[in-house]
Length: 79
Image 1: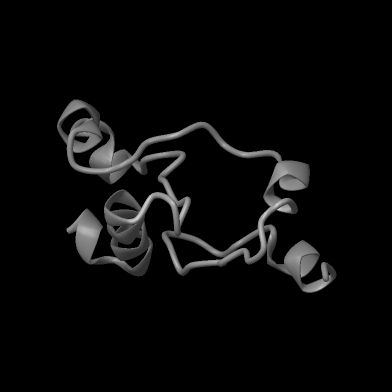
Image 2: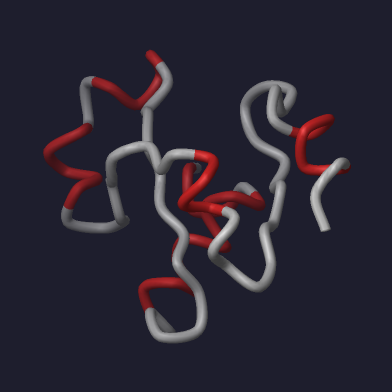
């Protein structure tokens, strides 16, 4: 299920501690798109954040998800 995946677990922690963690799903895969209304009550669905805005955070987590992280190489080059 969605909340049992690493990304889902992080989003759940964000729901419990929004001042500590800012995490959300920005896109649902085909597998979950038909359940979007139901899932919007159980998890956080948000707009994609620009990379420059992400750089304002103290830490950026690149969590395992459905696919490889296209931003991973760019994250390795940040301070």
